[in-house]
Amino acid sequence: MRFFSDNAAAACPEALAALQEANRLDTAYDGDAWSARLDDAFSDLFETRVRALWVATGTAANSLALAALCPPHGSIVCHRDAHIQNDECGAPEFYTHGAKLLLGEGEGAKLTPDAVAALLATVRNDVHQVQPHAVSITNATEYGLVYTPDEVAALGRLCKERGLDLHMDGARFANAVARLDCSPAQLTWRAGVDALSFGFVKNGGLSAEALIFFDAALADATLYRRKRAGHLLSKGRYLAAQILAMLKDDVWLRNARAANAAAARLAEAAAGRLVLPVEANEVFLKVSPEEAAALRAQGFDFYDWGPGEARLVTSWDSHPAHVEALAEAIGRL
Image (cartoon, rainbow, N blue to C red; front, top):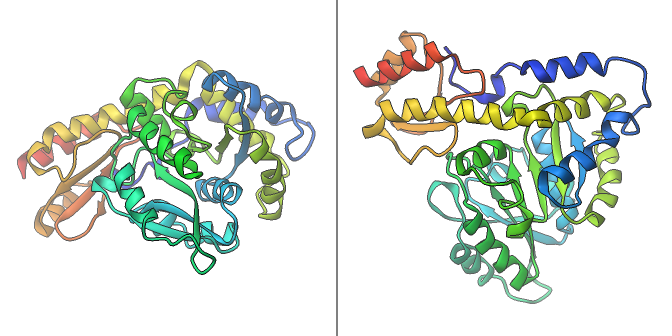
């Protein structure tokens, strides 16, 4: 009974069916009929004209986005616990050819305008220091908290005032939208976001993520960066087909709602043990080593998260019986 990571979840039926439907002769790379539909599909979703590129991994989506927003001699403000800082093996620095990450603080891996402003205040405006060019936030965060449209907009206003671009790592963007019951537009470009890494793999995709630019000009050079980075797949139609299938009939939202609901059930059972509120599909709870061992002995798989804490992650296909069994097991601790 696995609650280790939503990366380990199965691909959803719609994504698999789309692969089969795309399994026929078409133009190579991104010239196929499926890839050609991405801009329109995402433009409809976001209620504005966007450019959409497929890539195979979230690391590539984040790093290509940041390379479009920040030059090699610049810096990117992010949270100290951001995925781009702790879990991407220096890929953002590699793709940007050397940009620096400036690390901020905030509960639950959330940045606030005050935290960003405090970081910016430490940088002198002279050639001897790396100058900030972008801010990157994660929604939902690495601790499962969700930025509201107002919170994103507050950061967006600060970025505009300071001449910075705003990137959103949306590996769990679907879970954030499902939680807030808002439109994707409210949480992104209307709040000042310039580029979004829109995750599909954690939410039922097989091997496809989307990189969304709300400024079309940013996509032009990224087409070359994607090729240079080895992410222009010969049969890109298989990635585009998955994404289109999950956008159709809001499959992406259905999947995220299922994952969030499973996490909410675990949060209910673990009420007195929660490290942070549960707002998406991650549950962080306090457990002793002995209690963690007891849960594992009953067949539950999860991630140890520092001394005396565990992380439980639900997914679109978390089996209701497994969720209920874990909730009851937590209640018996």
